[in-house]
Image (cartoon, rainbow, N blue to C red):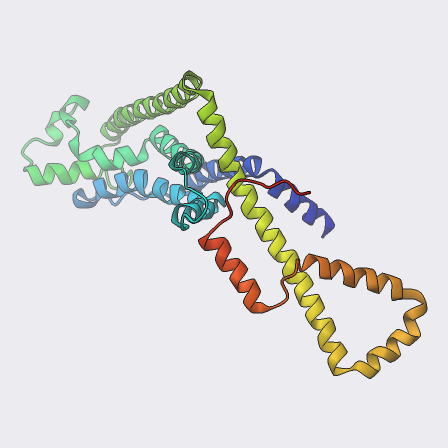
Length: 311
């Protein structure tokens, strides 16, 4: 348990590395899911395009939304966006920085899925087989005398090996469409890489002071929320401990005094120190209504970012 606790604390203190690791795992998971996915084209003119394009679009959307769900900064962004202004103004540039950071990480897994799907070519073959000009693959007598609907139904069966009789024509048509799909895949990778390069290269051209300010205060908002949660947990723990001690003191005073007479020689100093420590952690807030007021004020009117010097 101690090892897991230390690992959890390390991940909390290194959230950026943790989120990068999550993005990497999601990217690998998307590629693994595609390799384990059993592709079954319906081989029907009215469903082929929907199935092929849906396989190319729907899973990336799911991975994109999953990236937002797994990112803890989404709740921080929503709270900062919706909170009342109070004594602390809201900076739109900080919100944009946080949103862009979340979005960039969430796009990794969808990009991997689209790349793997295009490189494989099965979805392209299923979606666009009915648009083929089968005459260019030889054996023009195959579609000679067929009506337009019969020709479309024949082309729709190309992705299904067991339903298409002429395997040579099917192999040539499949290779042709997969070649186009792989070309689109490489173009997609080139476009994504070039976009990432532009973002990296253009950023230093703008003022670094504004970027550092935005980055600093976005980190501050995240750290402030974590420390507030930790302080609330410590206060709740001390509040519960003092409340339980007072309960037992009131209900079983005689038994408690008898117990203290027996153990006063060994633990009186330690008990008094623990009690004093718990009292200090309460920070003067000893009633439920007072704590509710503190939490409400924190939400509606956060303190201004102007620290006073303690004398």
